[in-house]
Amino acid sequence: MSAQSERQNTVEHHDTDDHDDAGAHHGSFKDYLIGFFLSAVLTAIPFWIVIYDVFRNPMVGAVVILIFAFVQIVVHMVYFLHLNSKSEGGWTVLALIFTSILVVITLAGSLWVMSHLDANMMPMSPAHMRSMP
Image 1: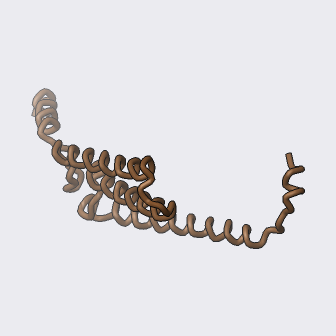
Image 2: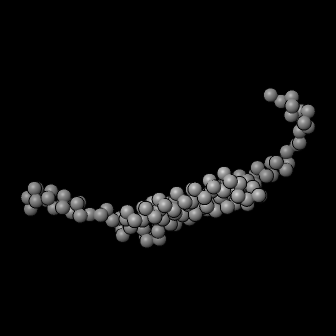
């Protein structure tokens, strides 16, 4: 084969290649629109909850907003990052699970340490607090 025909075959192959990495699905325009719509709604609802003070108990509002945040993370991973169990033989999902476990351990440990320190620190008198810089 001549060098020109090899270049032409390479260009033709590159033009028709959908950059399919081991069967990974890269999404269509419809998938991106669905993801964008869901992201916008999942952002607008928590703003509405905070602006109009929908829940009387702030803790309930915080929990609902955290649930919306978690759902939005899943929407971004599925629709924009195309994370599924089929891409790269499932290793991306395994890496995500491992990362999530590390984040949960780090956050739980940090909260435990802060709570432990709060319970065991020597209390300060209000007079001493006023004299601090």
